[in-house]
Amino acid sequence: MPFPYNEIVLEHFKNPRNVGSIENPDGKATEGSPACGDMVSVYINVEPETKIITDIKFESYGCASNIATGSIITELAKGKTLEEAKHITWKEASEALGGLPPIKAHCSVLAVEGLRSAIQNYEEKHGLEINREPTTE
Ligand code: FES
Ligand code: FES
Image 1 (spheres, rainbow, N blue to C red):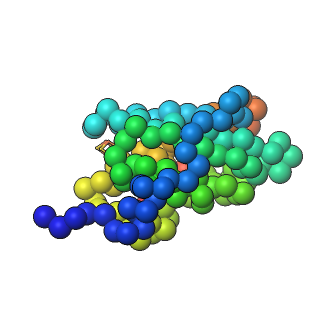
Image 2: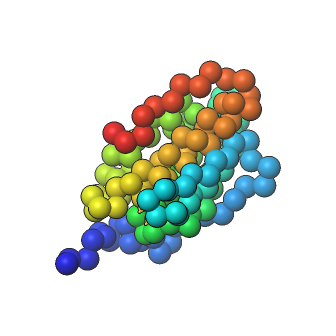
């Protein structure tokens, strides 16, 4: 069986960006996978006026696909508004990583799901309207 991960995925797996947690974050969420029992947590800080994500961190207890996707979505989401970040799709994340093995798609969907849930947590806490995008496209 050929090695499933490309260089970009491996680079993000070995040197993930924005790893860790934020103390008293504005929004946070943990998503778990029933398939493997792995988990990913996402923390965000949001500028209240502009709703721009000023800081974002993630912790993964998952596999290389999950870690690399966590890394890339934090890069994609930082500096974006909540509305823009909500629309970051799994496809976009996967493309930014140069493609992920299909067998590992759900592991990376899990990371995107974590970002969406952290945004939803912020919205819930701030009484904002929740308008959630489907994750898998
Ligand atoms: Fe669990 Fe990928 S095997 S997150
Ligand atoms: Fe756990 Fe993929 S096997 S999310």
